[in-house]
Image (cartoon, rainbow, N blue to C red; front, top):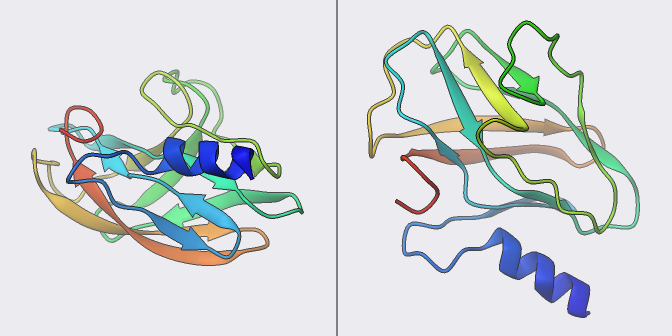
Length: 140
C-alpha cells in the first residue's frame, strides 16, 4: 500500500495544470513537450505499471508529426528503442537528456502553452489517448 501511495505521489504533481491518465494497469503522469521551432520535438511523462505483470510502451502516434520514436537519450545517431519496458511497481521517468518520445517531422512549431493529443500503445494494456502540454518544464 505504501508503495502505491509513493507511485501516486510521483505521477500526479500538485500543480494546477497537472493531468494524468490510465491504460489498464499503467499510470501515466503529467505529459509535456518542450517548445520547438525545428522539425523535431520531445515529449516527457512519468509511467508506472501498477499491475502484477510486465508490460511495455511499444509505440505512440500523433497528428502533429510524421512519426514518434522511443529514445533513451538525446543522441540521435543511436537507433531508437523498440519499447520501454515497464516492470510492475517500478516507475519509468522521462526527462530531457534521458528517456523521451521524439516527435519526428513536426507539422508546425510547438508553441509555449499549446496542447495536442497523442495515443500511447502498450503491449498488454492497450491504448491511451493523452493530452500533451507544451511547457519549459513540467507544470510551468
